[in-house]
Image 1 (cartoon, one colour):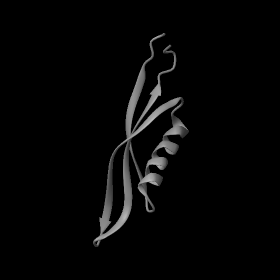
Image 2: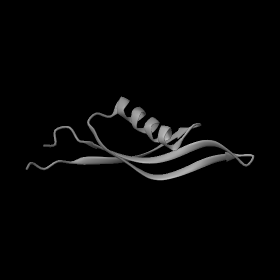
Image 3: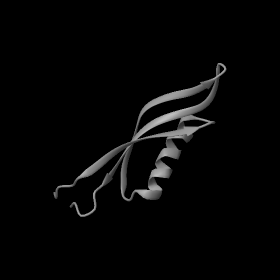
Image 4: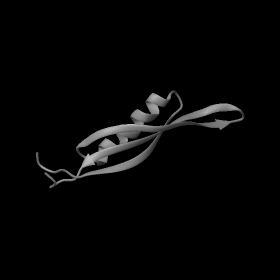
Length: 71
C-alpha cells in the first residue's frame, strides 16, 4: 500500500434550523475550494443564544483532504 498524506482542517458551520444543517453547510462550503475531501468528523455542537432563545446552531467539523502529489 502506498503512503498518503492528509491535511485536517477545522471549520464551524452555522444554521438557524439544526446542527445537521450546520455541519452540512461547513462541508459543502469547504468542498467548493478543497478537492478530494475524505472524512468529516463533527467534534462539537453549540448554540448561539439571544435573549434566552436559540439564534443559531453551530457545528465544529474537522475535514480531511489528501494532498495532491501524495500517493
